[in-house]
Length: 225
Length: 407
Image 1 (tube, each protein chain N blue to C red):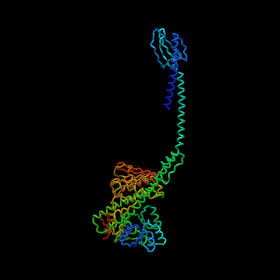
Image 2 (cartoon, chains in turn orange, cyan; image 1 turned 135 degrees about the vertical axis):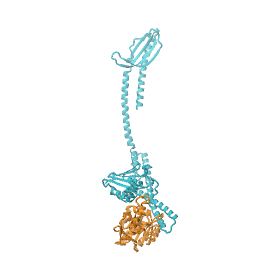
Image 3 (spheres, rainbow over the protein chains, first blue to last red; image 1 turned 120 degrees about the vertical axis):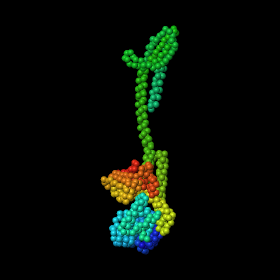
Image 4 (cartoon, one colour; image 1 turned 90 degrees about the vertical axis):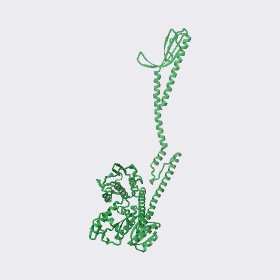
């Protein structure tokens, strides 16, 4: 995927760049409105990660420019503002999704993937990982040909894992992904543990391999090696 | 007035007695003069309207003079009368003793005194009442600007956008008072605003560095071949960062509520929001083997901001889950007037009121930042809802009364 990172904080911008490169994406960055406007105008990206609070302008205007040029770039707003109004305004302007700082990379990755699926792979709603196939339009999961019965949370969890395959996912990011970060936090990570355990059991019982590895101290990694 | 009245009464009485005594003594002197001049006891017709009784003795008497009050009962009409009596004794030149009693009736004077007192009492009383009334009228008029100032200063709300306005007055002291109060409230309001702005900005600006810390940390986590020590270090940093993030997020939310950021209101069903939240925690509840009961006759429609309603309910439900015991229960009662969430839990050791304070924590749960209920309280205050927390033994009950915001 080709991604443009528009973020005025150089350090944060560099981190996002590093992480997304690890995932195998090609990244470019812009530190201000002017650069962002030029880059977004000249090139096309699979996804633009856009901080709306830029020193020399409002990121929402970039979205407007893109929409005026009939650009099909996916847009993920990244902002320190977390109110619903900002979210709604961003989405109304034409952004595909909205993420507030500070975020987990796993979450960022999941959102980018989902934008990519929706935007570029329209029609193709299947994600596969070896024998596991997830159909995101009807929320069905198959192991080989066998359908897997998952609860809503287990399904979300699996999708989150697959979007972040081969990466370490912290329990915190799973909690936030499943229960939302507006909720000032639910208990210990026992819940995550239980969900992961159930998901793992269901996959292996259906004949799938156990891809969910526990990583000491951090959380989990969904990987086949 | 009572003191003045009795003083007057007694001084008049004293004067009256002094006058009676004077006339009695004058009479006595006349009688004595006559006795000395004529050597005999004259047959008296009492002057001054006094009655005189004379007794003669064949022996001498020691000279004596007493004045006293007495009451005598008239033999004719059996009416008792008061008298002031001067009793004196002496001897004539023929060495014969005599005693004379000069009696002055007190009744008339007493009646006079009573009339006077009665009359005086009325004058006093009416004067008193009139003066109170006048005083009231005058002071009300006089203190009116002061009272208005006090009343407005009392209702002054530092969070309100309305500036304090005080009436014009011609009285220098009050004008001075008003200008001091105006200057003071203006300064308070400005200080409050700049403090509020500082808080908002601080909370807001902290988000980006926090995002940087978290991002670097997560990059660090992805590195291969980690040593156990460094994993533990990273994990600790991660926990602290998450906590700081939650804390900041909570404070930011409170500051937004205070700034009326969530203005947009619409009609919402609290019942539906509660059901959604219960659904969200379904698995967690199953894990803790918590049973949930929902009691609601109607959808409980209220007019409020959607975000705030969501935050309010999710905080209440998550608290009921978090502080519950294994195998416990949660019971939600929703009506058009109030919402009550009862849950089992361990007995509360602190004062329930403290729970609504910022940063008050129950137990040592490292993931709790102690802001949940103070956010709930803030939202409740915004909509003039009443909120009460009771805890008896293992039962905890939180009730929110919202009769004021029904559409």
